[in-house]
Length: 461
Image 1 (tube, rainbow, N blue to C red):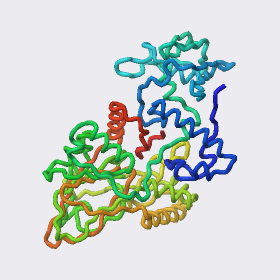
Image 2 (cartoon, helix red, strand yellow; image 1 turned 60 degrees about the vertical axis):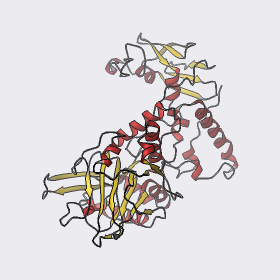
Image 3 (spheres, rainbow, N blue to C red; image 1 turned 30 degrees about the horizontal axis):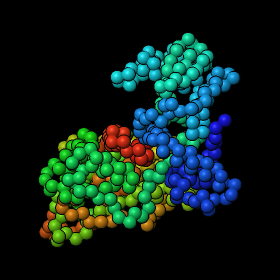
Image 4 (tube, rainbow, N blue to C red; image 1 turned 90 degrees about the horizontal axis):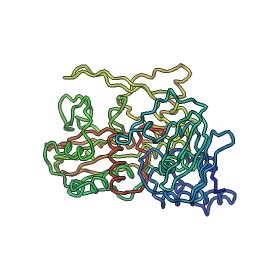
């Protein structure tokens, strides 16, 4: 039989939850001897799959059709009760698929429409106790299956290889955090606007670092929207399609004044808060003092917080915060209230999303016994954010366009004094799922096999 890796990295490092990878912990040389062989085995499996080009090894990020299993020497075994099928691939990786899972993912013309890729299967007619009667593989890379309900179907081996749900698949999660990058990523706008490869590089930088600065963007009204539309249509919000960040006498948002802005995320009171935020610097006169932009990767801060304060971290995953925007004295009155925990986890205790916007928090509405534990955890986390050494600070110049993942990276700014000058930024948003979709599409289309990291959109994968 092939090598079967059933070891979980999380059982070796209790606090290696979320997106932090092996590289942030002990090296193989530093690990205890009893772990070393396990880690090396897992790393070999990871390298084999990377070499074979299965972009969906890190499940849920993007699916890429490859010929990674065609003409492989493999072994297919059905369990005694016919409820599971085991496939041992040529590289030694062993995958187990349940009969009911395979029945629900049949690719025959009765179950799946080839052109649209949509399922045609009536799941209500599939019996839970459906078993496999007969299974065989073909020379052209397909698994032919006959089920106990009489259905004869087919599943491509590529599909099974990409969607295996083993421990190995679920354990390796690429890092999606930065602590103290030596320099922030920049791209010239001419490179990004020249074609798909330039857009992909921009999206890749956003995925890797959480932000990217585009340089030499024409200082024209509406250019921020044109830049955003290289990715996807602009996400309209209560602030319109695009908005101007400029100091006004009676601001409808504190951002439209010269005061400093503490770290926060925008529009967290939405059910689907904006994903990417783009801010284009149209004017920043030399006489203006202050106004530097600040960024902080909240996923990184949260992972550090999890290790130093595990109990308080747990509290912030259980007790909901009230986020709200109630403002009637405006052209389009707003009344939005949304309750959710600051930190959301999936079934593997990995962070899937974080929400942080102190200026838009409403009264805490929880059980009496939760009030003090919540505020204790909240204030410790707030201090961790305030004192983090991972803070980035820089001053934009006209022609700069700052883009960042609003679901992962906190942003703020230092207070400023105009001194008779002007500081004018123009901004807009892109939906998080539209961003991820474009990133996956371009990665597959341009054959970029690097793993796509979690974008903070609450997805469990």
